[in-house]
Amino acid sequence: MKSNRRWTPMMLTAALAAAVTLPANAFAHGYLSSPASRALLCKDGVNRDCGSVQYEPQSVEGAQGFPLGGPPDGSIASAGLSTFSPLDIQTPTRWHKQDIRSGPNLFSWRFTANHVTRDWRYYITQDDWDWAQPLTRDAFDLTPFCVVDGGMVRPPMTVEHACTVPPRVGNHVILGVWDVGDTAAAFYNVIDVQFGDGAGMLPDPETPSFREVGTIAPSTDLRPGDMVATRAFDGSGERADLATTLTIDTEAGGAAASWPRSLAARVNIEQSDLRAGAPAEGGAFLPVFGANTIQALESSGVTRVEVQITQATPEFASQITLDLPGEEVELAAGRGTVVFDLTVVGDLNVVTTLHDHAGNAVARDESRISDETKTITLVVDGAQAGHHTVVTYGTSLEGAETVQETANVFFVDVPAPVALEGCGGIDGAEAPVWDAATVYTAQDPVCHEGLLWAARWWTRGEIPGSADVWDLQSDVIRPWNDAVAYQGGEQATVDDRVYEARWWTRGDRPQDGGVWTEIVTVAP
Image (cartoon, rainbow, N blue to C red; front, side, top):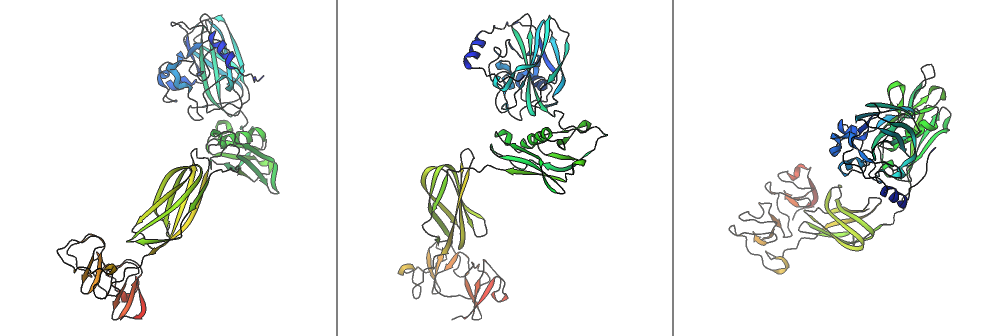
């Protein structure tokens, strides 16, 4: 009978305090060889990163008296020995699991130093144990499912015990305890198992066969509170009597690799016309981590089985607000600067990205913002005029919720300064005459052949009107030059016709079309 007894801290403290100190020269040693203990699989190289127990799987020895005495909670797998503490690590995927079925099973012990024996006892984890926490007494049914009297005699070097394992589904841990008869020592061996449990077995060959009708696929991670169900259909529609539902109760159980196995095991327990799992020896279908096929009895008439996921609606408390001063942002010398206030309610990791109209990310900011307003500045050099999008999303620190806000901005060109009559400079200042020996830097104005030019970047010796570095400031349209690069929107003349570049170009004749568009206006 299952025990629901829980041990209080006072009870455990008293029991552990009463445990007899082990002698340093205890001679008995042994381990569970079949199914293999966690420690033995470390020695065999199946379990990795186990520490020194890989050399001494026979030495997992602690004080007697479990569950009142013995190793403390959290150290049961290592028998309370710090040397073997890697055995106490417990995650859903840390240890190799061996297939087992409920019902009659054989457990074999192998001894390297057999000793007078008091008894052997076997415990198994409860249905609701947490497989992501170190083993405690609360994880186990503390009524042993099998007890073998040792008779206070020395056993042979190998013994087998026929024990009936109680019904379980999924991953579990079996604890075997060997109580030595003439010392205060006991040996603690844990076995990591997964239950096929007989529920996935095909019937005998003379009975009707099964055929595949669906798959439980590891499609997505689920969260506690989410539900996943199998829905069966025949020629007349849905069969509600063949539906199976699983509610996710832990983060580990909701992992994409885990819940399909749990759902498959539940199908095998609840349904007689359906089976789920991976094909195994003897015609079995055993639930596995990852994808599990669904089989239907031919006589059931089931033609397909679908998997439906219902996710709990999260209640998001966090908020993001964008406060842009306006949609238009002026470009200055090809630089666009977007400045706005971002207000966050909650504690979020916030990512803000500026995308151009084609969807390319051209600027980015990452910040952690907690219940405050922060000014975000996004700078784009070489920006193009036109539509851009600000996308801001925040994720809570534990990753449980994400909120997003989006806003549009438009980069606009600032009109070029109009040159004064002749070769006047910007804002009325006279520009110096271009000199081939002089070094000019960005925005430096010069006068050349009666026109005003401004340097785009560092230059010396490059003639205005014949080099890309110079930007014409005078309000005139010059004849096309095959050596000059034109930006989108710039104009040039050919045979008194005006053409405008659609995008950057050099050497493409305006009259050939393509990159150039003719402006139906006769040039002055």
